[in-house]
Image (cartoon, rainbow, N blue to C red):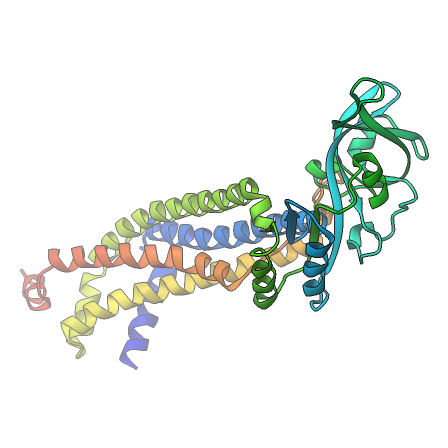
Length: 390
């Protein structure tokens, strides 16, 4: 009961007193904004990063099996393992080519897809009677629907006419827009037979896997590497630069907001030193009413800790509420030219923990330092009582 009376008294003093310290209010507001900002920034950045990664995985796959010396025996062995899983996959013959249409030339990556496999979901509705081009790639060569496109393989030549690069013609029958520049500007797809005819190669050279594999299936595929010459690469392995950039972006964001919390804590330290000095006689009154001096000083510290806890909890709560509002009504704010029309929201328990514990921990540390300084600079309550009448 004494503890509740202590906390209630000083809460009312901080909020309603005419002589309350504005510096302490500024510090508390900064602590609230630190937790609030960390929550909002992590939610939006996490959503944007998750959206980018998801779109990339939908096109490039979660895993890629690359055959250095592709044989139907090795391909069938990997497919047999994948058929026991719930993931989609397809074999393809991939090569880098040049495409030409009416004098316009552009580099491209040509994927010859084995239509006997399930195939990726993003291409299931496409017309594979001809070629499927990325939207920006089609724009580069100014090609229209059903126009014939010349596909040139610079690394493969025919000696009949003097080492001329081999080429084929195929019509454009569909487009694909992935919202990923590296895909829309360079990727094209067609039947496996088209690439086989261009390269005079029969076996596919890789298998794309769409979905997460279990550890057992990964181990089974890796065990085949001892007898077959291929590599199993994850999406992270295929996009190391992007993964590194996203991680760096997250770390820099956390560093900046942690630095902001340090600045806030400096204000907390100054505000608490002034506040403790101002309420020294009020603390003495609790001692007169029966509390021990050590207990009073300890309660001062725990009051500050509890107050910081409530402020940080309020910050992440209102931050989460703001994110939900932006997620629902964000499409009315973001213009049509952006890929994400809504503010994407992606939060985990780790994000909540970081948003709460970074400002709270820094606040507790600096509050404790200010509390120690206050305790060292002040006399015992007996000395204060004796000095009142002098």
